[in-house]
Length: 179
Image (cartoon, rainbow, N blue to C red):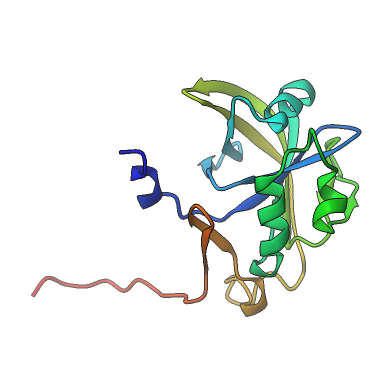
């Protein structure tokens, strides 16, 4: 039962920046869109996490989408506490100002979703933050002409523990008729 979530836990891993000064970064694998209009997404953060405290305090966060090349930084930000270290320095990441919120974006990432907290729900040992996307930006090379991720911008997907998958193959659904 404890491992059942791994069957559905394959969304992209993101780096969430939060707080004012100092800023913090948390690796989040539990993220999902929840509404088109208004644009809302939800992230799940452990109740005891330092980042949970910072998001509660500021009411804002940024979802930074890293490519697979940032696996080392993703690991550092997910396994060390911002109470003890400066994660930007430790992970070799560069903070850049956001357009609409206090927490910074991460320059090395391929996309950024700046969010204001719309709702907070305690769910067991986690807090579900529903954020309204106030700004969505992606690097110009993030997508190819078919709006698919470019080959060098493959996303990471957490499989559990220290195992990750890298999104690589794109498939297109075709209507199939029963035999």
